[in-house]
Length: 480
Image (cartoon, rainbow, N blue to C red; front, top):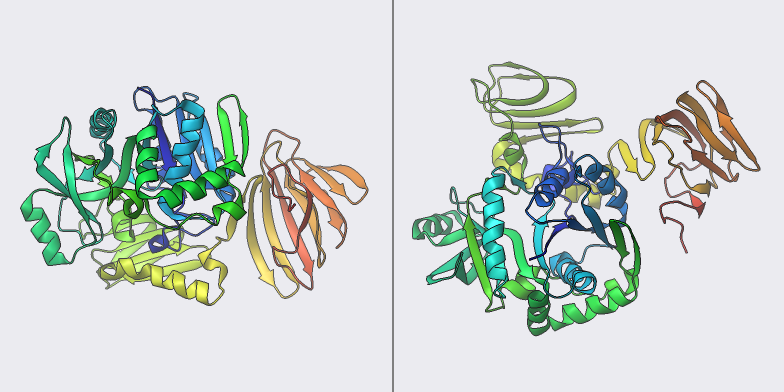
């Protein structure tokens, strides 16, 4: 039977601020082994037996970043397909859109394995065995969940109540789903022996899930169907990209697949599994990926300790010193530092809420910002001036654009630049520069085979990133 993994990549991971931000969310966080979560998820899915294609549901702003991350791990050349949401409408919309798209492309009998982009699974062999068990059930038209065998009474997860009086070929029927419990209730679930953590991973035949959605959540199916009809599909060899229409997609109900379908259907089964699963939901969970020293401290970066115990420090860019402290989380990034007690790791999202309420961009962007063509890093930002380091990937190009309020001075540090400056086109080598006056149409391209690195000095009355008018763009960012 044909299996297509569907990776849902839409969450922000606000509990992992300041590393996770809206423009660089949790799936793109680099872990101690050098890979990030979305790379691990893609590679794990692609290695499953018989998989030839992986579908990712994400948003347009993260498409090119996602493609770049997949290049490093897609060694076997699996086909890649994408569905781009203009904004998040929860998991029911994402699953329904993926199911309808796969139905049109492959028919009703293809099976879809729904995975979150930001989960970690350490036992890949057990994961593969659990997927095989799930496929047996989905072939019999069950909607399959993966129930994680609980290791302790966790209050931050929902639970699956497995009906062990109703054993199936490779799992159990589901009696009910329960919300996040208090500690006493969670302990009672552990003691009962038939409750499992709800992992948020699913497996079902496309025809089955669409039939069940039409029965239990027809409003979701109808709205997504309208959005798909108005959407744009670009396809080629080993690649396709479906961009959902914003106006019609905005009419899709904002509801999770759990509420819309799994808690309503009578065709739900669970496969209990012990796969080394973690949702990496807090800095406490991240810290467990790093070995502890004799005093229980865990470090990423250069750290000195004196009479300090059970701390976690993530500080890659500078020396950090701890003296006489215990049970702290210290997360250092170039533009923000988080210091929290381990007992309050779940409360970090409250800081993100404050940043949003105050209009502070630290919830959205890092100092280094990823763009389809490369990156820019803000080095200094003062009154009427801003200095950036810009890196353009080989053969990549910025849009043909114009600014109303700022002029720009470009100095090439390394590589070669092809520059359109008003009516002129010129080539700039290392140590050469050009000045672009406000109101002049301009474009920057890297025609070479190595990265183009330049320093940009902006000056003017207004230096906001929204002072840009695009006329042409290779990445579909021109406003229609």
